[in-house]
Image 1: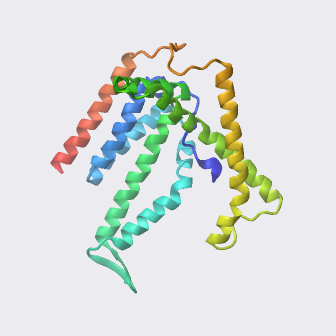
Image 2 (image 1 turned 90 degrees about the vertical axis):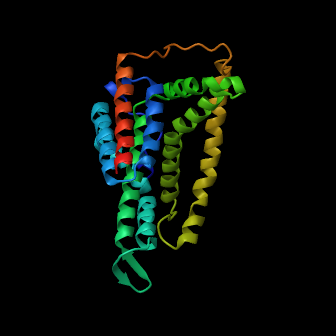
Image 3 (image 1 turned 120 degrees about the horizontal axis):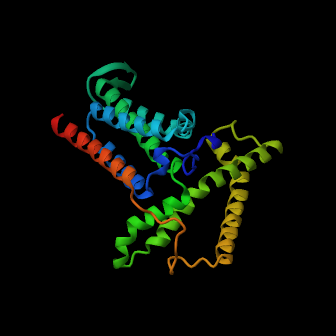
Length: 266
């Protein structure tokens, strides 16, 4: 399960999506998330799914790798579906005891489930197709207008990128610790919830120690390279919008127009 988390991982590639400017991809991802919450009908999800499918095809990222990222959140999605199925009032279809399943509950559960899946896959595609340094530069460039009001754009961008970058590292470290504890006879699967929670202590303690060690090593490496934040910092590859970026932006505007039109007409 730990290895199935794909958030924060980068899938190397040379596709059209990989080559897009990070600023375009970040803005497209944020607006895509907003669009998913604007949608109020299943027909809107068809448009959102078609757009996401086009991105997946153009990115050439294996579908097995993308769908694998849903495994760690299956329980969250299932819990959300159950809450909507049993808590929404309406036309009763099935009833047993104090529980009842309504037509409106099923429709709401399906609606929320599709939204969550599209939301997770859509946001994951950003990190899968963008290098960490590209994310840093893109976030910093988008936040740079707020420097006039004292917002530390570079520092915020660096913190967010480091957090995303080290998610796979910490997950790998967690997997190693779990295997080491299981080799010593630890049991993380049997027993009630309280027993399972207590069994996690032998994992959390060395994981925190490892996280602090990684953070210290990173800080020392940055100091050794005379890292000074945004102070007269230059970049090896300057970001520049090209024709493919403008084409991608135009296509995404068409997608947003379809979503807004769908909401107005439905």
